[in-house]
Every structure is written in structure tokens, then in C-alpha cells.
Amino acid sequence: MNSVFTDENDIQGMREAGRLASEVLDHVAPFVQPGISTGELDRICHTYMRDVQKTIPAPLNYQPPGYPPFPASICTSVNDVICHGIPGDKILKSGDVVNLDITVITPAGYFGDTSRMFMVGEPSVLAKRLTQITFECMWLGIAQVKPGARLGDIGHVIQTHAEKAGYSIVREYCGHGIGKVFHQDPQILHYGRPGTGETLEAGMTFTIEPMINAGKRDIRTMPDQWTVKTKDRSLSAQWEHTLLVTHKGVEVLTWSEGSNPPPECVAGLHFRPSA
Ligand code: MF3
Ligand code: CO
Ligand code: CO
Image (cartoon, rainbow, N blue to C red; front, side, top):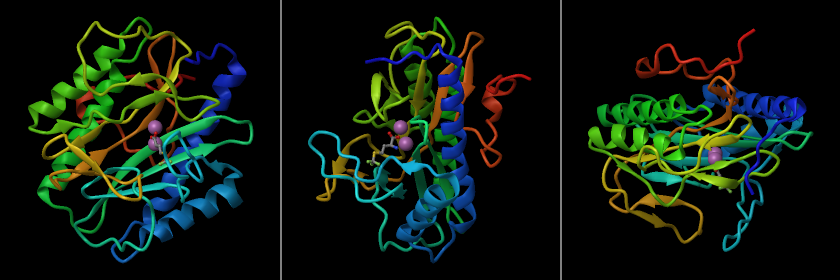
């Protein structure tokens, strides 16, 4: 089912969920340094969600059909890990890039889902460029969001920008509707043709979360059944926001003080509620 929120209480609930998810990233950001383990980052986030926010980490024990329960509170995807990396003993070193993906459930029952890339120590030229292009892809997608736009419009701008840079789009995973459940329709593909797919309407809430590989698009899933890596071991990057379609255009729900400001390529885009 496809949720469209028309009640202002629901919208406020989604705003709170989005802000809280983003604030977990603000909180953990200073700890992403050479020498820390991904398991420690998980613990820092878990403690903050439970004790400070009173939110529930949606990934913990999440079990879609055909999967074992996810064993941690956040996803930590390092270097050639595309998504769903399981936090553990892995120690981050200078030159690594890591995506931290946070989904909270608020006491009122709303989900907020967001991820950012972090560079550990000194990043390579490739890591910086891949991370920046992926960030631009997400924002170019966000800039398409308004009532009457089609889902294919979003996928098309993302695919075009990534492929122009020589990168490839992962096809097996996509953005998703989100609200009082974690994953729901519609699927938000990060590739496609303009003027195709479902038409957006005010009140829809969904994520845009492109996964982009420096090499080929092919994936391989690890024996833990969660961790997804690039088949060719090339670097992969991802950014994610949860969005609301408004009457005027788009609102980025997963926004907080520490959010990375939008790139030049979407200069002038209005994406926060006006006073
Ligand atoms: N947060 C991921 C997403 O963006 C989903 C993670 S599911 C988990 O949709 F179980 F791996 F946490
Ligand atoms: Co998501
Ligand atoms: Co996510």
C-alpha cells in the first residue's frame, strides 16, 4: 500500500521522525575517526536513540521475508560495501569511506530514514569525487519532487548524472515509501525515463537513496545474507533523505543542524517549510 498523509498530525509526526533520524547522524559524526570500530559507532547511535531520543532503531531485528533478523541498530557500509553493512569489529582507517544509515521509530510510531557518507582521515581523489557525484544525484532527484511529477523523472536525472561521470547505478535496491511502516510502496528507482511511472501527489512520503558504484553495477551478497558489496570490488557511495511531497514542491524531512547543505547544482531549491 501507498501512504498519502493528509492529516497535519501525521505530517508533524513525520517531521519529528525525520529530524530525529538526522540528529543521530549529527551525534555520531565526530566519532567517525581512524581507529574506531563500526560496532562502536553502532553502540554510540543505539545509546543515543534509546536514552536521549527515546526512539527505537528500526533496523534492529528487522526481518523482511527471506532474510535473517538484522543484528544491529544501524547500517555501516565501508568502501566496497554498497548497503546493509553489519557493524562489528571492523576498525576504520584513514582513506576509508563509510555510509552510516539510520532509521528511527518515534514513540508516536513514525519512521525517519537517512544516511550520509563520511570520509575517514584523508580520502582518495576517487572517494571524494564518487561521494560528491552521489550527493548531487540525490539532490537532483529531490529537485524533481513536486505534485504532478513522475517517478521516472527522479530516476532519470539520477541515472544521467551518475553515468555521465562514468559511474553505475545499483538496480537491486531502491528508495521506498515510508510512514508508519519502514518500507512500503512506491519503489523509488534510481534510474528510468522521464514522463513514466507513478505520478506524485501532495502528502506522499518516500526516500531517495541512490547507491552508485565507481565500477560496474553488479552486486554480490555476503554469506551473512545482509552485506551487499560491489562484485568488482570498486568503491560504492550512498546518500539518503526522507521526503514529503508538498503542494509547492518538496520538503526534506530528514533535516537537522548537521545536514550537509545542498550542492550548487540545485542552488535556489526550496526544500524546508517557510515560516
Ligand atoms: N535503512 C535502509 C534503507 O534505507 C534499510 C536497512 S534494513 C536493515 O531502506 F535491516 F539492514 F537495517
Ligand atoms: Co531507506
Ligand atoms: Co536508510
